[in-house]
Image 1 (cartoon, each protein chain N blue to C red):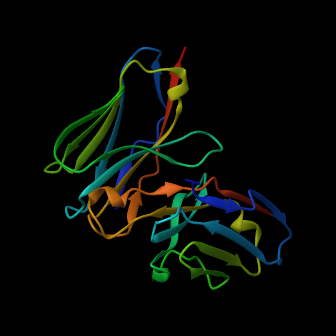
Image 2 (image 1 turned 180 degrees about the vertical axis):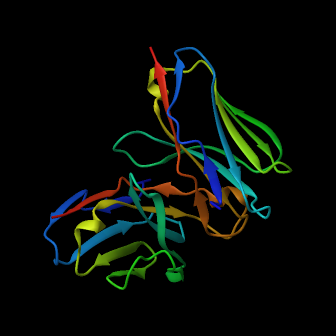
Image 3 (image 1 turned 90 degrees about the vertical axis):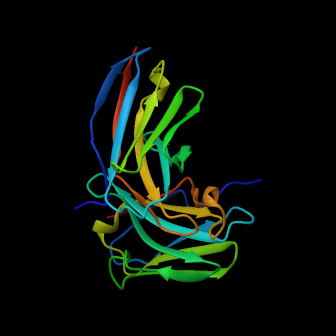
Length: 117
Length: 111
């Protein structure tokens, strides 16, 4: 089975531009998490979905950030307009939640390295 | 107070030694505990899960959980240079969704 797929792997853009990051879930998983990682702040949870429904978006830093999950296998994270301080590695992770303990295990995608100039 | 705390390191051990990584958590309701390994420039990779008090062994890795002390650790026996990475401790809730990650401990294994 394919793992979590993210695209693009690298994105360089200029301040003010719109950025869209994409994530494809592992087949059969029902929860999707978006994280941001920087040296200064570590791994931060931005938002997570369960069965396509956003459960908690309290980690989204500003209104410039938005996330959608239009179907059970795909999600997008959009930043509009982007700023240099958004530069980070963005990971999505998936899990099969709501079941026995082992289903809390999260599996990460390879990440998107975003640089905003 | 951070919910999951780890010593940021770096922790340096010689090849062949035992590396001991520690983690404390603040929420007594926590029930699922994980260790992730992250190589530089890569994504976190799950290496151990533990759910009940005591030890769980998998190859050279042993996870230890003490819920009374709100403490979880990871022992790496016969450490190898390839074990050099950042190790993230994570805490979750059975049947729930959210997992809280620590900031990670950097481990260097010297050849």
